[in-house]
Image 1 (tube, rainbow, N blue to C red):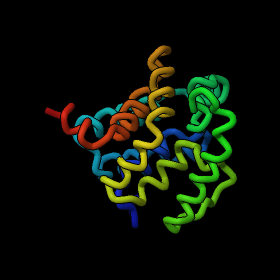
Image 2: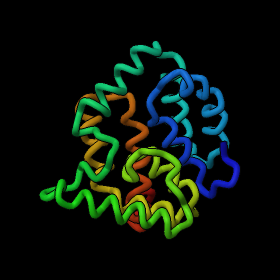
Image 3: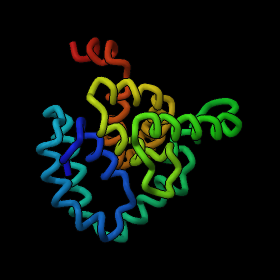
Image 4: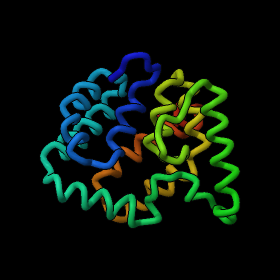
Length: 182
């Protein structure tokens, strides 16, 4: 799972935000191993491991239903980050998607899916190809959407919340993240 990746933790996080169908559940043992080797900080590794444990133990239909209620039916937790743009969000969404697709292309990364380029698991897949500092700078641009999703999940104490909290923390400007660590 980590071959050729510069920041594999982002791939793990993105994988855990995919729809929990049978192939997803079948990959959980591999994801569990990847959690241990992906370069997470100790607290992050424990938190992500606990999410994998929950996913491994939860009933398949209940997990699928929770995913749909959370990310598909609740606009406040939509994993398409441009849907969380403020004010003129709808008007700004198209240009933002075009800029994002161009950014991927400029970095030699081709979309191999029919998903929109602002889909968080897809963004995290791209982020995994970047060096850690570049990955954090890239995610900083997505802070507004990440914080909106995390806030919505916090309102409902959703079990996906720890993943969004880790991603949102990594999206903070590096100077801010260092100050918080002190």
